[in-house]
View 1 (tube, rainbow, N blue to C red):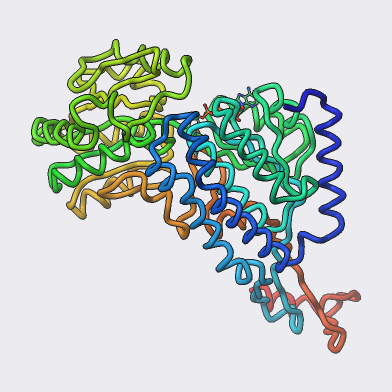
View 2: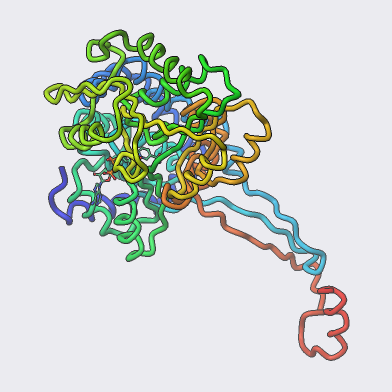
Amino acid sequence: MISQEVSIADIINKQRAYFNTGKTKDINFRLEQLKTLKQAVTQQKDAIINALKADLNKPEFESYATEIGVIQEISYAIKHIKTWAKPQKAPVSPQFFPASARIYPEPLGVVLIISPWNYPFSLIISPLVGAIAAGNCAILKPSELTPNTSRLLNEMIKQYFDPAYITVVEGGVQTSQQLLAEKFDHIFFTGGTAVGKIVMEAAAKNLTPVTLELGGKSPCIVGSDINIEHTARRITWGKFLNCGQTCIAPDYLLVNKSIKENFLNELQKCLQEFYGDNPARSSDYGRIVSKKHFERLAHFLKEGKVRIGGETNPSELYIAPTVLEDVSLTDSVMEEEIFGPILPVIEYTDITEAIDLINSKSKPLALYLFSNNKNLQQQVLQQTSSGGVCINDTVIQVAVSSLPFGGVGDSGIGKYHGKSSFDTFSHYKSVLHNPFWLDLKWRYAPYKDKLSTLKRLIG
Ligand code: NAD
């Protein structure tokens, strides 16, 4: 825990000095560091699984799939970094002949990465991959709500990296605000929309650019033209994975009235298949991160009518996978981001009702549509705006490195993953080069007799 501003300033100064040596600009250095990061994650797998179990009761399978799986993002960067880092040629119009143009990606400097508790390991390592690939030094601030993972990250980064290059600063809101008061070259924040505003305000004081990976209510439309069994399974998985504490989990369902009953029966069957008769005893079902979040979620259970689940156990921070019906749009469960294992279901008869409802709310991070109807797919794509869309599945879009990941409007600013991570942590420097061997005089004074040539050139 950092308790004095002076020590934060000290860390930043050391990182600035390290950055100024120019070491991180070398592509081979970056490649080596990415390989070290991959090795660190690989060697610490057991410790990562244990920390996540202690913090969130995360099943080992989920820890592998959604946290240790960040190795794939590292491998992707290792594979592509040399191409990404190459200066790109840019076309130059004939009037500037014989000049040539190139765009050089260059690192920003010292960057700050602040992360949340829901995927407390991968959501700090994944942006770090971009920061390293682009040649920056980085300070990482994990969430205080997952203390075991935070401690492990601190120890792991210390063991594998020079603190003047990458370091972890542990702590809560106060530490985060101490960090935010400093000048960075970029701040990458993942968390809630309300805190995102605080981060952006603090960054503005130093004119620090930000990436804000925020949350919100991600809708999931279930049309009538579907494979009902696969739809139920894919929604159940995406919603109740990590006990619903996933930024891109389907927040609420908009289900076509004609299939609603069949679909909800299938969903119930699926929950039984996944977690058994009593999910509280399933080793594959997680827990709520804290008492505060448990109480927030328990309040939602008082709204609408419980169709499936609804059981809670405060001493274990357990909330059963729950489906709510008959909620009103003014209920808090439909006004706030749920971020837990509670799924309100709203029925619609015409797709325009579902689209209008989505458009009446802030732009979501993810939008899900289950339908084989191509026209309906196009209509939803064209008439709604969201960070991303996944058709006929949930959540897996986040794992596709070639797809930029980020929000729009209230769900965020900027994007990352794969090349987008490299872009986020790079400045693209435009360089025009005019050789000496030719010096056409059409632009120089005296301008007499040259205007007609200029007019011809400009058109
Ligand atoms: P949060 O915003 O409360 O906290 C995120 C980080 O900010 C933590 O490290 C915390 O210490 C710090 N922080 C909290 N309050 C602060 C303040 N007042 N000033 C400065 N720093 C502060 O978010 P959370 O509860 O950890 O995570 C849940 C939220 O994150 C949800 O809204 C979820 O949708 C969102 N999220 C988004 C993504 C994404 O990729 N877009 C991923 C995961 C979570």
